Amino acid sequence: MLLTSGYIGEEATAWASEYPMIDKPYEPPALAARIRSVLDAVAQKAVSGS
Image (cartoon, rainbow, N blue to C red):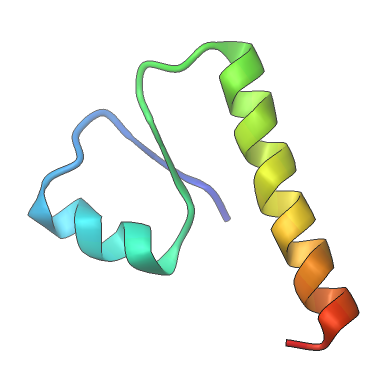
């Protein structure tokens, strides 16, 4: 799961520690890189068994 927000306030800060986030506005390459980062982290957890 990747959350997106146009505003990172105190409430969103709590979510950011639990879920990956990307701030708006973002360009397609930045979104693609963030998605790749999230997928790589999930794959690494699967490999390490965490």
